[in-house]
Length: 423
Image (cartoon, rainbow, N blue to C red; front, side, top):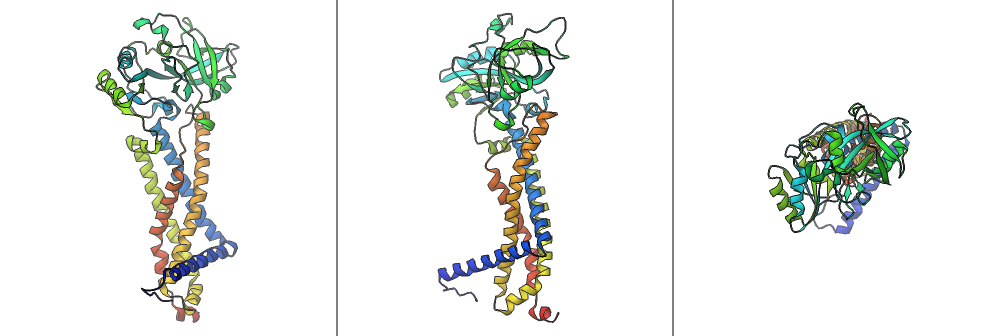
């Protein structure tokens, strides 16, 4: 069974298939035999480590994406230079853009720009007419046009075109009083189209009540199963409600149209702001957000270290108990490199199984985190799931397995037929 430089490739492949087959049989016997607990512990440790990696990476991606608040179909986004992703998660106040209506009107006038709208996000308590309790909902103020756009995961076509309450900066124009609820918000408020909802809570003065709004539509938001209780309203009406009318403040400006033209117009209107074209490949946004990138990198390092340490330790202990089996393989003609290959393949297969289980647990963990966050401190999903998590998690686990493999190989290489036979 020694190596031969001229050995036909078919024979080489046959030998590899045999070694892999022996590795699988070895693992199967361990899984169904007396060593099943150790194998289960190894798989479980890898699975939990990978699950934690997936959950933390999902939270980091949620931070970078800004959650459902940033679920829109715009081509260019304008935001304050110091803006972060935290407000969508924990309602932390951030820098805002001023003179939003005036400057956005300049952007709309540029050739190649189809539409531009400032957006403002505020956490507001809404109460139904019957006064049966109030619920917190994220209100997103927009300036709709005659085309259906998506902002906050919701379509804008159920809102009347324009923003009449703004009235050239006087904020005394007629209110439309329209509200587009997400399904989650409608469920929380037990509301349906035609119902009236009034802002309430300690921020609303009793002697100056805010006019109620009418639900014009209930739509599924873009985050699906993790749908955030969110609603669209006209921008100026939300600015008046929140006090952001002083300075015409907005969190960001969304622009639809030709990317280059939109970016140029945005730079002219807001030279000190951050102007970025929208890249829909969400995982890449991790590299654009310092906090999200640091969080995901820390999770990666911890995952690799913990996974490597546990796999190396348990695999070494397993090999130490299997010395007699290895001695038998050597006595029947398996050379050292073949025995070491069996050990390496067995270790990597165990790690792979743990990784696949960990991916499933991790995705489930993300949904659990979102459910808990939505019911407690955050108003909706704080973590995101992406298909790239599967190959990423498997790759991290296999790298950990490769790094851990030398230790059990050293233990196996020290096995001697004479010593084992003499026991």
